[in-house]
Image: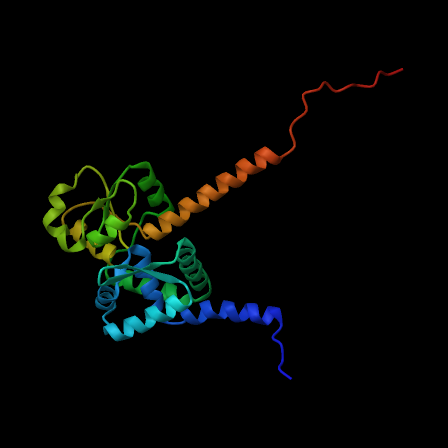
Length: 246
């Protein structure tokens, strides 16, 4: 007689599909790249430095787990994230890993220290200055990624163009460079180049994915507060009767 899988076991099996699909450094990097902009398998393979066949296999695994989807235009197939929840999953995984694995902090700290690019400005303060428009913000990712989405007010200055275009930047303001998030080195290279040209330059660890996630959290918080205000008890406007003392 065939054994029937308990419903809870079946549910965990489905959750495991996501875990298995993301249990690969290459597939996590693919998701991170697709969070920046949709791409073809050929371009993704070039960015990963892997053969097209290997990249195609990883994309197939991600697609089977429904983390990525495709669109076709003629002979070209473009991959993109299924929705914002996949980007949120990446951010949550990173947050847990950074909280639990001291190795991550050691790797990033050592890399930055070796380049002499320690950042004296706290990231929250830098983020506030970016939001307030108090600094010049440059996006040093490739132009295609900038066109797919960028921080408000940012100027597209791909890293390979920056040295020839620094004269376009005002010298009376700090310059903040960002790229694909905290593990991306493009903004570190940009910060070093800008400082060599005499600019006061900073690196914003957050990228477009992190910016969008903050915006979604802000909207969700506002919605909850508005909903609570509508459904909460209304203050009474009737006068309170005070018992007369005898």
